[in-house]
Image (cartoon, rainbow, N blue to C red):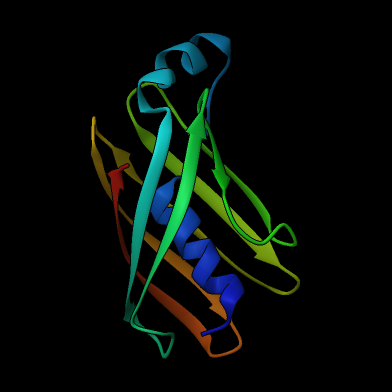
Length: 125
């Protein structure tokens, strides 16, 4: 699987969010911090698993890796995550939920190996 899809999944598993505004961001602060995200491929020919570091600050998710990647994500006050990542024609998106110290969700993407999908797990670091 191409690196861009790996990063997308990581981002997704880490977080992909739609924050509604300042009040939601203030409430989402309880999810702020560094997260380790494990992305597992369940469908497609992408690599079986990847682990990535992601940071959440004020409801915004930031990938702590390759700056060439177009990454955006959010976490709302209830922990709902939405993430999108792109690198050229390849990319992935994911959704899920964060709790106090862990999170889970699903992702899907398109890379050099075709379409892939799976799940993600996150833990606070």
